[in-house]
Length: 419
Image (cartoon, rainbow, N blue to C red):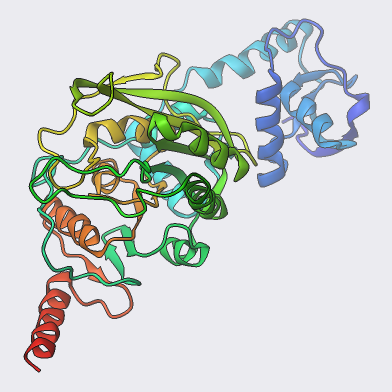
């Protein structure tokens, strides 16, 4: 029986095998170092009688990166030279030959993420994690792009915070850090996808001429409005959290400047190309919308797709958009959502509109956090989700269902009008 006692030896005394064919990139060494920092030293280095490394070259490189002066070792003296050379290869190759039960692996990773564990410490790259944690899209009870009409009288009131399954919707101010922090309830956003007012006095093509609040400001006032909204996003975003902002080309300078002034990195501008043009008063009719893409520049950004994605996004407009003037199709929002987040992530949209981001999150098992200033559109978002899922939204704090609150507030309104 071999003596497998563990001894600590100086890192500088250990001699790498000169013909080791196993390579270790700087990124992989960093992963091993992070694992050692989190879990401790769980796998001693195997050395021969002259401190030559038989197994553990990557761990020794990680120890150097961490500034360790000693590492635990097990000395193996009874191998022949041929056995040592063979085991250097076998130690790596045999582990590669194992497989994964993808279903169990996804279950374990999902539960670890729910517990708040940093999955970057496990060794999978972001693309692999994205594939493992991406559940099949849910099918709703209604069409993805169906949305209820805007009611004449709103149920929601400013300050209301609604709970919709794993999601939260607040009737509040997207420029108020206090409101946004209340919406987040202690969570940080993994991704932000949002569609602020375009400042073009946009009107929907309906008989009622649907309009958007904060959509007609002076140049400086609009910049300050955007800067405050970006600042609120920044305050509740994780380091490296992705950011997608739909906007109008005519206000591109303000959108870009406010984004970078708030601390976000502006990486690229993507373009949503629609199947048909939108009639307007300008010489060239618009058939596209730009989408700023970047991330919170305090950390590395996250990307969960492959390297084949384009800045040109071809998606049809919704068949009908008479609910909200700038309503987006769910398929359009699903695209950046799945590229830059994974199942269980928290996704923030401070301009909730008709609730498209919420439906995309519901379909792909993300937790949405939506802010909407207009009480009537808060109701649209809530009713849309209820019809899509068959579930009931409740008021945070007392747990009353949306239908109950609607009935009680209508009774109060009627009593006041009669009085």
